[in-house]
Image (cartoon, rainbow, N blue to C red; front, side):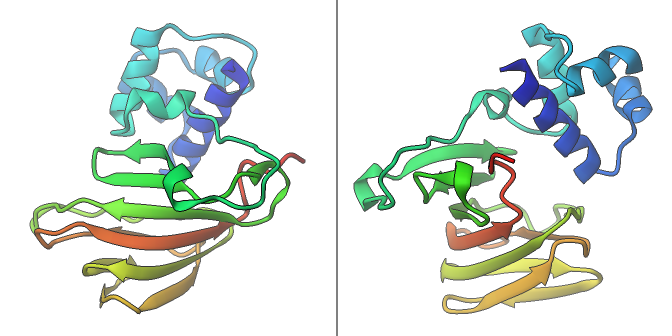
Length: 187
């Protein structure tokens, strides 16, 4: 379990282009400890993990969510489960029962409304992303460009480019997202 927590922390840190020192300065946890944690060599107390969650503005539960791996290739509508909640704004639903042996990572994401004056910071990571808007109007940022995407619109981008999205309306946006690589695939 602590191996998974360490991997998630490293992924979050790299996604924000933070060094161990940067994270150490923001959490008052030593760089040596954080390094050992990321490599799965030590465990962490909940209050210290909360400090890390606060830095990344995520729910503490993110570190404990493990995707289900059932043998059935079909996920029925009523079986869809929340996979994680990010920043109290993005609700991710798992759309596959067998993530451990697949290259793609499919999700249904609900993007909750946020204020138009909210600063959206881009991030980048390896791989590709495909999104398809099912409902609502999504504002997508790719590089220095801003796009408003409507139901039926899609985007397929290299994840290496700085990107992010937001919902500046007063209704939920629902979208299908497929990413590669699948971070849950067993190597």
